[in-house]
Amino acid sequence: MKNKLSLRYYLTIIKSKTKMKPNVYVIGSSNTDMVIKSKSLPKPGETVIGGDFFVFQGGKGANQAVAAAKLGGDVFFISKVGDDSFGKKSIEEFKKHQINTKYIKEAQGIHTGVALIMVDEKGENSIAVASGANADLKKEDVTFLKKQLKKEDIVLIQLEIPLEVVNYIIELCHKVNSRVVLNPAPFQKMNDEFLNLVDTITPNMIETHSLTGVEVTDIDSARKAAQRLLEKGIKNVLITMGAQGVFYMSKNAEGHVAAKKVEVADSTAAGDTFNGAFATGLSHGMDVITCIEFANAAAAISVTRMGAQDSVPSINELDKKFLKYVYR
Image (cartoon, rainbow, N blue to C red; front, side, top):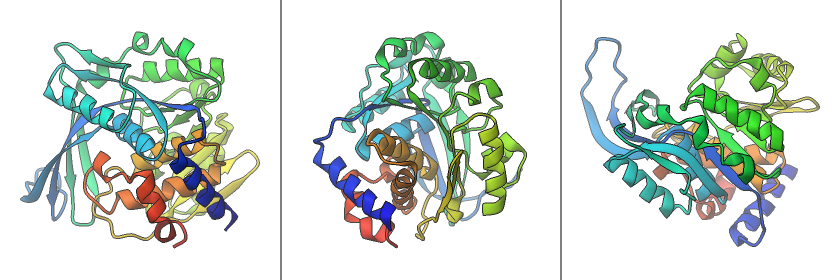
């Protein structure tokens, strides 16, 4: 109850826009998502007849940047798009959400990233991505952060951009003492020397298995996996477990936050909404458990509707639905 009352207080503060807060720097991919809804996902070699077709702005980095901004963060998005209509449309949409786009680069002769997504009647999805300009993001595109970042800033990164850039960013943040939140998706193998510099890691159950060798099926196995990640030097471990909620562990504490029970329409952006909300919560000074409550509530709303960025609730919507999605 204490954490939920604390969250009620923070929602009021965020809505008031009176409190100065650190910036949230989201560094990652920007895609155009092409989505087909079908009764079931196709098996290898199978063709299924789908229903509705949608085109959304997406990409893990972009989704998380939009989530952080819509939920009250002061967001800079660092990414690379193609010099094409998809890229221009993406930048237009970011600006609508009050995201600072001055560090988004346009790559010449390379297409903007594209994701082909299928969603079944249960809201489960399968995704294939053509990285395009995302794969062209280079270390020189982010060197400005050396002078830009402040100790109190939050840096949120994923793994849809080149791993050498991710590693460079982690090292850079460590040098200036900015907090790094790493969402290790899609999974790429990382050296422990870089994981050791991460403040918070947010894998799902599959990514946790890839990182630790522990198959996460329940709280006990999540605890075992989280301990292995702490042994790598990571300060905070958040394992997102879908309908089972979120398991959290640090050196001195652990806990479990239950998921909200909702009717799922599309789970595509649940993880991205969670991560963007979590980073925004940190920027407003929330403790980790309150951040998880905040992020859980936002993710619960997002899965009740189609799309990635369009499904993310605003801070005003989350506030209005507080009783349903936090106290429930």
